[in-house]
Amino acid sequence: MAVMRTRKKTWKTVLVLAAIGVAASFFMKDRNGTSGLMFATDLLFTVAMAFFCWGLCCLVGNMGVFNGLTYGTKCLIRLIRGKRESSEQMKDGYLAYIASRPRHADAPRMLCLGAVFVVLSVLLSFAAA
Image (cartoon, rainbow, N blue to C red; front, side, top):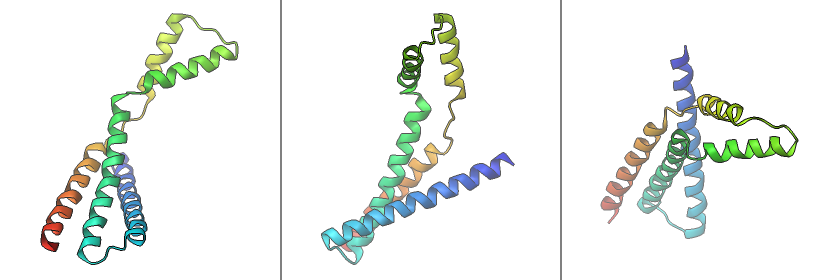
């Protein structure tokens, strides 16, 4: 059952990212006036960049780059509110916080989809030239 939810979520993410890429491409088309095969290559490249950006954000989240900063800010807010904790409680709280962080299993998949769209864009640009 959990696999079905994950796949459903992945497809929703793919559709949303593709829609964002298409919308950005049409916005740039109106500003630059491209048409034909050049617009198609721009469209594929813009969709690829949407997938790359999302995949990189998920990858950075999985690596836990900002966990210390986020937990430190939460501790600072608690300190300002007057709630004091011992260092042992803070360490245990940090470890629990890290363990509770969700992992994005679809990060490699999104990066691969972005790479596929870049390759398609390059191939189409060779055909347009």
